[in-house]
Length: 260
Image 1 (tube, rainbow, N blue to C red):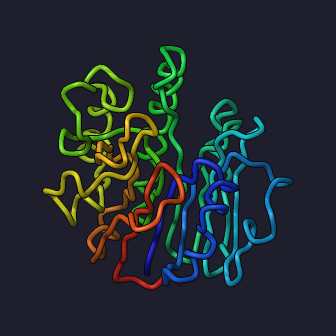
Image 2 (image 1 turned 135 degrees about the vertical axis):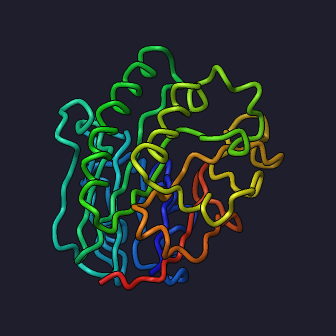
């Protein structure tokens, strides 16, 4: 079973850069996407349902903002849009799909980089999402949460870690929160499980400023975070960089498990 996650930074932009030509060549079963920046009325038929795929989406209320989706080779048995908190759900940040005994979630956690107000929102979302993560892991099912978590966990997860310790995405409180997600709750960072020492090869996002892509001044903020049983079945992980669809790169992980 192959699962891909990618932050589009706009589905229409990613489409214009060849994402939907690339998709059928990947032998993927599930593709989780974030930051659609589109409403249903903005989506073409190819965006909604690429040939051979089922498409599911949770749109933000605000036009041209946020939104998440899941493409799958098989129809979902059930869907949950949102976390049940009006302020979070209005931003289109959570979509959960059930495929037999497998739960797949596409997640887009907020960024706090625009200022103190949004960082406060981010902390609020993190606190409430932590409770949800605790409930999910207690179920004991195979679960994978794919998406842009907007946090680099360790110093090896970004190039300029010394200069970013007071910046959103690498704040001590954010990193400690991930420590608890992995340590206290028992979720597993699948890429890091398979590549425990990878540094600059592990980045998934590059700022559009200062030639960050050319200089590989990146961050690892896109994850597939899985329940322990599923994580043990992960056998291969790669970050695709041969073609650019957005300021993020696709994270591709293979699991020794059938989708259905």
